[in-house]
Length: 112
Image (cartoon, rainbow, N blue to C red; front, side):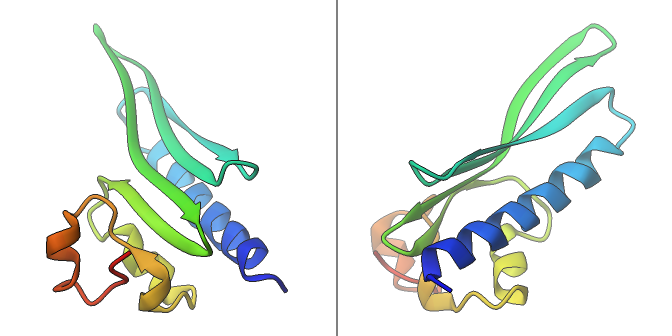
């Protein structure tokens, strides 16, 4: 299987699991997943009302760029990188995009 297609499947499964978990929280909002395979963009979107407060939040944003998974934003407790590693994605194929390029060399993940 092509690495890109394999990573798309892994990303979708992980994000759907996070959205399903978040949807069961008693906060009054729903979680949705948005997949754009053509542009390599994958999001979890929290949206809705909790009492008088409207929520529109993107807790997870991943990009698939040059067969590497870029974590653009991660607001989860355990970290999406942990989920990716458990799914078999090697560290050299995960980029912590939210970290400054000068800091990435110390993370143990891909630098570019």
